[in-house]
Length: 233
Picture 1 (cartoon, helix red, strand yellow):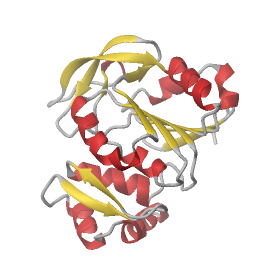
Picture 2 (picture 1 turned 45 degrees about the horizontal axis):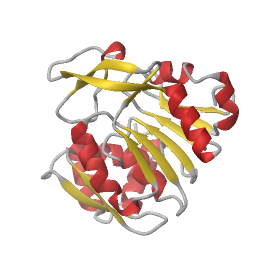
Picture 3 (picture 1 turned 90 degrees about the vertical axis):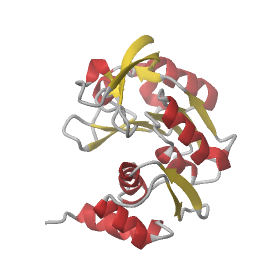
Picture 4 (picture 1 turned 180 degrees about the horizontal axis):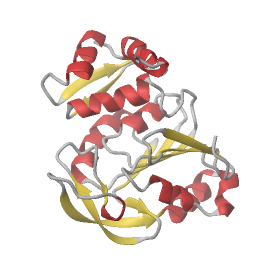
């Protein structure tokens, strides 16, 4: 049985994609040639996004169509685990004055992210680092798709994973720096394939009054939200 959110996602495909039939076929059947350049309808007008694989079509569906990160327009966003820039693109197209501070350690993802966010140069800032509880070097597990990599301390290696060494920055330092620069943070988005809850727990109490909302994937796969206090929404 389809849940209400799935019906919303299907209607969202029709509403968001410039070629909804092609998008639906790719979403349901995982077929088609890649990379695929899709056109998306947004509040700021149509934008194009380069999607290296069918897995990225699912990401667009989750964010733009299903609304996993909400439908409002936060002005200052910290995007932890920015991947190829789909979530950052979503936030940048909600309003003309939004700013995104993105963190993504995988080089191949960063290359695509720069292409996808190029029309919004000056409104996004990229750090090619992983975000962890503490700063320093760490082992990061990558895979060919680019969507399912994460810190080895928080996920088990699977066939196809390759271990690389990445530079990590502490989440406290990330958020403190953005608050100092922007005055406050409206939304912190965390998608790190396993370390989300540890990162949320590592946010110092002193910073919560300066954060509007934190959205992250919990251990059971559901998208959770915390507001500017320690209570779950």
